[in-house]
Amino acid sequence: MKTSINLKNMRILLSMLFVFLSVNAVAQNITGTVKDNLGEPAIGASVVEKGTSNGTITDVDGKFKMQLPEMENMVLVFSFTGMKKQEVKYTKQPVLNIVMEEDVAEMEEVVVNGYFTKKWIFFRS
Image (cartoon, rainbow, N blue to C red; front, side, top):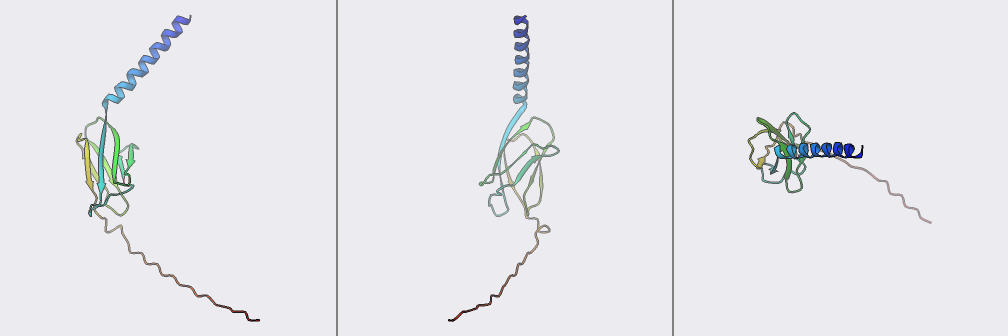
């Protein structure tokens, strides 16, 4: 009885190990940087595999790192506030360097004016 349970557990464990190794074998790591048109890093820009929830954001240096499944015709979507969204076809290159362009239509001028008055009251004794 114990031998059959141990054998069954061993088969399950080996099956899980096989699946884990096969999944990792088809995934690839990519890295890159995202900058604006002035060469400044785009901190917090989003990098998403189109049509999925697989994605990441850039760090303080505009760098990102993510794992992608090995597929044909994959598109990565890069977006950042105030910049045009870019869709880049991924052709299995390990490093991507993206330069984002300003989206002038999205940017609006905001002017804030503020003033106040204060009445000074002096007490004399």
